Image (tube, rainbow, N blue to C red; front, side, top):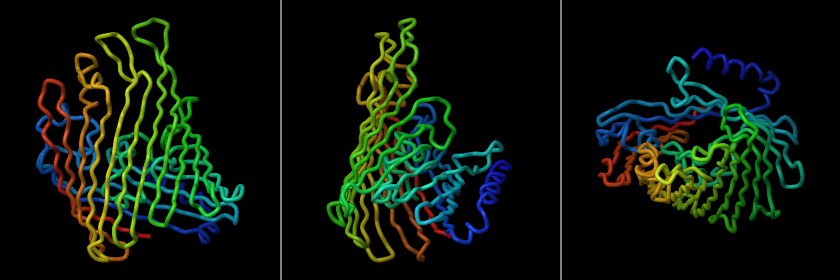
Length: 378
């Protein structure tokens, strides 16, 4: 906790008094009261380790708690007509300090060179990659859950590097975004390998938009356990597509899908060989405004960490790998009440089911009831 407070103090002191007077602070928080209605009795060792219900509300059946899932504190400043900067801190219960308390870390720290050439901005530092910024904004309920690629760890929400994005068509109907970064999230880099990102964003009308995304995560080769002196590739290619349609103040619909192929990620212990692993996911979501201050929303995700049945077979891979490669369905439904301009109260249900391991029964579904509070304090 002391380190977190020092980080906060240093970050604030580093900003000059003049810049503070010219810039803008903003911040928001969301958290819940949750109750785990149902969990498989052996959830912790037979269900997938990255089960979404576990991260949304950890614990066994009948566990209940108040939790603070995220606090953002952001400072934005236009240094000049050409340059702008952002510094953002996040307090997150998943980022525990050494003493087990809620941790604070640097979420964003970047410099933007606006119009480095006509219609394009250059950004250097810790920043969002071009994977799901558009779909997350279209989903509109980050307070309830991350979008599917973020939730399943397919692409980190932040990376440290350099990006260029802007308009391919002058009116903004077609836009691009490219980035080269460390592929280490908010952490310092530990190797020479990089991740290369790109997307195209098309907006043919005010209501309809789509993105096509791809990235290459370069990684070090690893030693082949079955052939002494031989090494194998371990790079990953991710592609994704998002399509969204909205009618402002009425309803919103979106579909997002991805495919990630990782070279030699499946170690077949029976045939003593390696094969690629393909992870596939699709997310369908929507919301409808019943009245200006009341909306209903729902989302369905299907995530399959390994489309090859070999990856789920404990005869061919280790039992732990087989369990973590089981597919799962994830459903969220809720009602959002806008109590004030910057205050939202959202009762919601989280429901997740799991594929059956080979020759075994599936873990029981996870069900969590939550009352989520989301407010903007700056």
